Image (cartoon, rainbow, N blue to C red; front, side, top):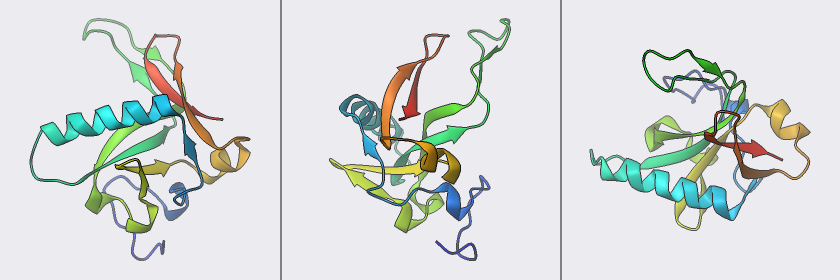
Amino acid sequence: MSPDTLTNPYGFRPTDFVPPKQIDVSPEALAEARQFLSELQSQGQGNKWIVAFTWCYDRNLRRSPDSSAINEGPGIDLAGYRASEIPADAIDERSGVALAFIIPHDKFKNAKRKEIVQTRLASGRLSYELE
């Protein structure tokens, strides 16, 4: 992925995309990705969607507009992107689900098993870890 050819509205750098076949996905995480893709596709608009396991440096949750924010810290969440927003050579296909892994190089390098697994945050919200 050349920095000269990567353009997206999110500021991702080429090194933020883990190349295909470098990360395994647990069956549970893949099932959630498949469900999320189905929800994206049901919204129509004729877009081809890519489900990404995306590193977030900071995550905050509000249970209602009036509640205090819960800081969930950094971690991996699911996100949906149009295929035009992800470099073609970063798209991985798993059991019919187009995936991308947008994870900083140091986080990927330091993971022992290189597998995405589900986890529950202290708030009870579903999230993911790279083991």
